[in-house]
Image (cartoon, rainbow, N blue to C red; front, side, top):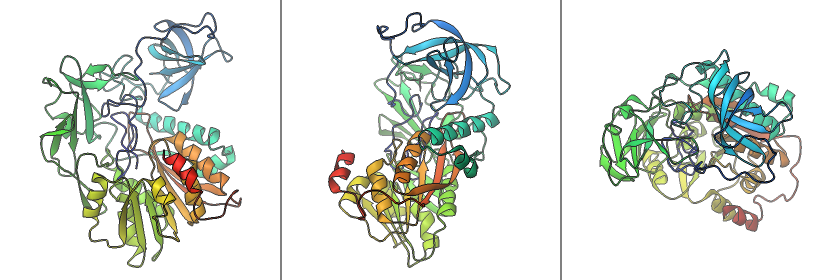
Length: 471
């Protein structure tokens, strides 16, 4: 499953934390993006006259792009690409260069000369250039954030999945809001502790900590936890979580500090007692929303067999177990650990749900999954399932695959891998599970198409290929 992006990032329903958290997510100080640090010396290959780190340049901002920024060009349409944060399409801004790379620059809009109609004042005082990096879109009106994310998903499917504009139009792609509004939704936050011993959140693409009084997108119970107003000597991180009961747990460097050991989550009429390390969606409405989308798209029939790959604590297995009935079966594959333990407890009364504690690649390579299979749920890490897993799933011959994704680029790449085996993207549901951030959650339905898969016809790819992917 996909872990939740921090106060600026996505997460997955029911999966263990396989995923790397988003680069400036208050909930995950150790991000995929490297710390910005001082600018590297300008390379000889860089065009003469380009601005260096810390210099300012006036830009006309273009389209949105994956990553929480917009695209501009130095000196006009043929100039070098600049990825600009804190901007909106169509604006004229004064931008300060934050990173210089061989083929592009990164910059922050530090002054808006001609504002766009959808620009609003950020509700958080720390959401500005040089401030907290967890939220990418606080300067964008909530309705416009949905259009922003829809445009990003569309562009990724066009460019990486190589869908045609007509195919995209047929998908009727639009990002839908979840109930509760854009603030006060995040049920887990990980604060980093600064050298001053105060807890705060990280700057964008940096390990530098910004002291805050509270996180505005955090759940009220998380905001009220006594974390930011005191010192934390000798600590590196403080994690705060709440669940369905409203109780708050505080952990310091992974060790219990205050509150219950387990977080209780409820969905689909069931209850999960989740220990630390077991993944769950960070938006209170996300788990049921995504589970409902999976069932709607797959339309399970009594007696069918399903695989729930990267299945976490078994949220999607629980959703499928009912419609599959007493003669159906669900096999959940998840890394050994707390998620599997929590799932087995929560689904103890569902004997047709079985957990296989293993890496998905290993389970496929070692043929640990029952066949034949009718339905597959794929909820992979942020990097996606990859060609070897896609090949194995397609070769197993299910009638449909529900692909749950928190990264539209990885989703689009895997859609293209499926297409190479004769599958097509039939429908997509997109949800704003992470308001104020760049992140979006997708549920796509993949079905066998007209084209035939090229290559072998066996139920699994060559074991050596899966072994290479697993490493």
